[in-house]
Length: 191
Image 1 (cartoon, rainbow, N blue to C red):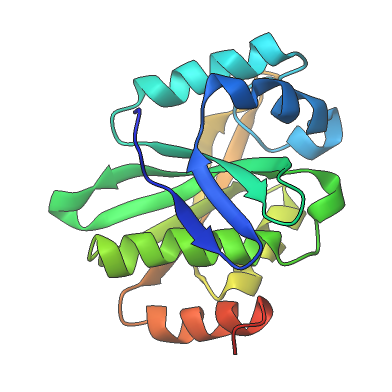
Image 2 (cartoon, helix red, strand yellow; image 1 turned 90 degrees about the horizontal axis):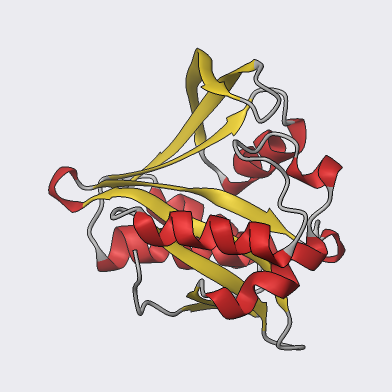
């Protein structure tokens, strides 16, 4: 959906994902980094425009471009999706970053901003995250956030190559949020 939310955390600004971000996002994607995603690798800005159009067409999705404050560069994208306020739940996903920011504070800062939106602004009871079980890097990053592993949905998704993939699910509940927030704030230098 088109939205006007702008979220901030140390070092990053999450702005509504728009067509203007397509060239920068296309330039940072490569085949190995995209492994574990549900869509084919976006090789051109036009491919990224298709992803942006799909995000815009999803009524429960708030898609963001991740802008690095120090340089103003677009260094990735992430989303709050399957947002269901009546059930007080949402998921975080569709996340990818430029390789140069892997292992930095960018991911914890983005998650801090997204979780704050969910728990503190929307009053959610649950925020979930998921990853293909073959994507060890993403699973490790999710666990470092402080999310709780919930289990695996077997043969849950179709990979871009047509094979079936298992999905590992994780979540943070509202009563767990203060501890998760403290951990994220420490990782981004707020504590």
